[in-house]
Image (cartoon, rainbow, N blue to C red):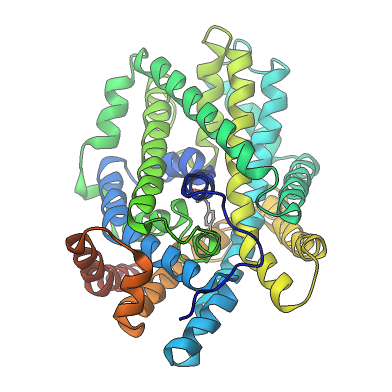
Length: 452
Ligand code: PFF
């Protein structure tokens, strides 16, 4: 395909692409979700399956997704349309863009609710609510927050307004700069917390929990959750990374860049686990506590640490910021599409899309209180959205991307665009993308979804 230009601008350098993609990848998925699903699924064996999914499926698919974006240089929906035409492929493949856009809507709706929890915790931390906290009192504080739909709605609204505000200004102004300061700060506070958790008596138990592989704890559902999380944490299968790839400078090599993003993302998730589980075991908490795990463990750590109020406040603020840099990548694909195809200004596209997502988010926030008993297969509204998006839509999107790039597209076009320096690396990548990744995703999806 002839070289395309992006109407939304370009990242100013490869390094800024790495920052933005890392900003998208590192978020609630690493700090909130990974520890709690690892806890629910028994720890070590789950962590191993997750790491395998990142290496064998996530990284190869991410390279494919960035490559597609850079080739098309438009929103994922229009990039896919253009590529399908260019490659003479059946129209059906254009569905990758649409399914991704829908997944982005659904994910952002509940993502914003959870990000709202971290905003709520900034205020609680700063107000000294956790001074002298005990495991019971942190549980009660979290329970009170969930039982209060008005408070949840307020925080959800603030978070959506922030997200839309940034997306409507475009990616270059503000965001690039903010990420380059705030991400390293988040990393430093996580390291500080790691130092603390290493000093607790439960550290050994925490390590053991995360890295001893007890395969009796793993079943088809936990494998599907591990695969789904590999996609979720790397922001794959829905076009976020494709949209960011569209703004990537032409010269940069995709392979190395992706390895860096995936490496940082995985490192942060593992550190988050190493911080949280020792605190769980030291304080006799429940590793399988579910979505509240982060909010019921860290306040305890901060309450016992010198200057804990300050660090705790800063920490939850940075978590909210990490969530914000992910949230904008969830909204960007649809907003970019509305600007390109509906002739809307960025501001009105972002506002309308934001309002719809905000409304949908109310369903998730009510599922923690007023609607808690409305369930489908034992899952409330939030659980259903989470399962449907992370564990079905993202892997399916990733599968289609792998097959499209591996089998449908002209190999020469792909090789030219991906620009890997080493021919061996290219061969390995293409082999995994064609054979291993699709087969693995199909096996996991079929086993996990068809009741045995
Ligand atoms: N990767 C983000 C996280 O781990 O929190 C969440 C996310 C962002 C998922 C963008 C999907 C996406 F397209």
